[in-house]
Length: 265
Image (cartoon, rainbow, N blue to C red; front, side):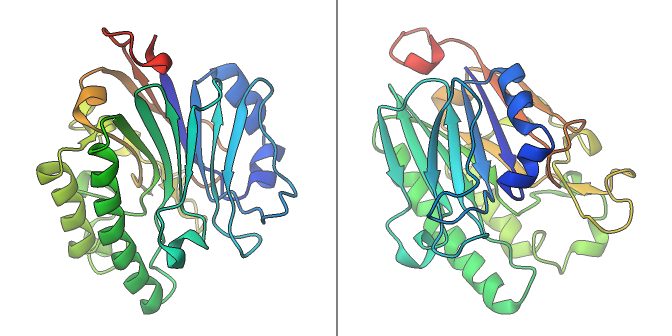
């Protein structure tokens, strides 16, 4: 199984830059998408030929939104977390494939104002509980997306200058600590590349020449329960693929030994 996660920063813009052709040639089983930026009327939505699209679109057009492009039609789809305050912004969607559940999440940014940072922290608390609930339902779970948090000093170039900024605040990093150290979840890229720094960055500011100089952040993740984590084989950030201000993160898994998981056979 091969899974890609990518923040599109607007699907129409990403399509104009070739994301559909890239996805078709890369041939992943699932592409998890964030910041689709399409309204509920669906105008502008596209998907690569041969993929089944799944969308969760916001009440506010041109804002947020998540989705999946799936080579195999899902057995079931779950829209949102059951929390109206976040679900109206379309930040979580999940699809089941046999014994695996794949989630696309777009965690809020808190950089615009304090009210949004407060909402981000509330979202993080609720989302961690929601993740735990998914893991207890008996499936292996893969959570992919833009977490808007750099976990450690290795995960952003200018960590000293960002210690008081949203995305690298102590309370955000502590949330990540709890997720990985006590929650039983694995950061798949970091599992395979424990010392990686610049080659793991997935987002760059549009200001200055941040991308050209690789002044970036690693804020896009694929996070898995133990069964899936034990089968991870490869993880790569495609920094050369420039469809948005984020880079695609690709993770590949070994086949399931049990044959229970359709996506891993």
